[in-house]
Amino acid sequence: MLPRLLIVDDDEEIRTQMKWALGKEYQIFLAEDRVRAIDAFMEHRPPVVLLDLGLPPHRGTPEEGLAVLSELIARDRFAKIIIVSGQAEKTNALQAIGAGAYDFLTKPVDVEELKIILRRTFHVAGLERDYRKLQAQLQTETFEGLLGTSPQIQRVFASVRKVAATNAPVLILGESGTGKEMLAQAIHRLSSRKDGPFVAINCSAIPETLLESELFGHEKGSFTGAHVQRNGRIEVASGGTLFLDEIGEIPQQIQVKLLRFLQEQRIERVGGRQEIQVDTRVVAATNVDLKKAISTERFREDLYYRLAVVVIHLPPLRDREGDIRLLAQEFLRRSTVANEKEGISFSQDALRAILAHSWPGNVRELENRIKRAVIMAEGKRISAADLELESPARTVNLNLKDAREAVEREVVQRALRKHGGRIAPAAAEMGISRPTLYELMEKLGIEKAEREEDKEPA
Image 1 (cartoon, rainbow, N blue to C red):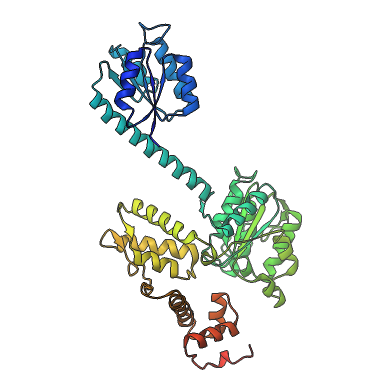
Image 2 (cartoon, one colour):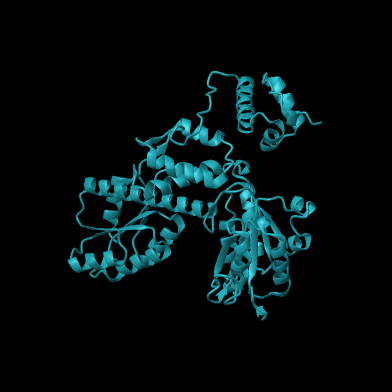
């Protein structure tokens, strides 16, 4: 279908000439006054308009044409309005451009010159339209800084929208590198506490002897080195959100104090006797199986249920259908801009390697590998070697059965290499049972190294 072009001119002869000259390249719509111009514009939505300023009832002044210009821009601010007028005074041109006109041409117009200008204008309008579509798509893919279109991650986003509006404690479960802290920040930003502090603490990174003081604060002189009173992270986060990362690593004696805080919203600093009222929402995260930790008495069951009012499972990157490529391209864009190395792209073998890799380090591993590759790459194409990934074997000349077996063999061998030939963890990573892995290995002719740990009953 030809591009749509609206021509607004009070002179019937000029309208006819324009239609004859441009009708092979464009679908032409004509109007001779303000009312018909607005009606035609709203009905056909042309991206480009040729507009005369001298329209009835004020043919001798630009008043009516400028009024049409303003109305068209008000209805579609992206429309490209080219003024074609016999009123060539500089003030008219400046006024039209200031009101939103894309260009200003003086009658009589050279037809060949007009064709060139129109092609350029339609090209720019098309580029802007594509850019707006891309931005709209990106907005649907992006959620509070998190990127993903897979059903798995979209379910997570939906849960965050629901829970953010409450003050309920949230427990985020997920492997290392999946983005648990970013999800906690999203919950905070979407909550009524967004203007309050977001305070994060990694419970596994602080020595056990200091963790209690970090969380609850301490009074002056409460222990050696406590030269001043210090507020803990719970108190600092009052009015906002406290993010407890690696909550499964908290020692038992601190779990007791944390449970009391969650029950009563009161704390006592180390060495203090005064109870302090706080208003702190807790979002916790872990990659540890807390239910297993409860069964071995490493984690309190009552604390678990206080923390896990709402549980959000953040899926590993390998289980997010279609998101790996999307994230890889976005991390590449960010890294090339940050390192002023724009123009770099992935080679085909790099993309195949990215899609074939299991990403045990999840999103963090993907981002770090791409950052390093952008810095180290010598040319404009990032290879699998730049990413320090194996280039998967091509399956170009194989039939479907052979191709499927080649992929299965590569996945099984990689999982076995990663886990030193141990069947149980390799099967767990692949998401299959040990008997199924044995059957696969037998079918593919992969020999199993004899190991004592693999001899337990299936």
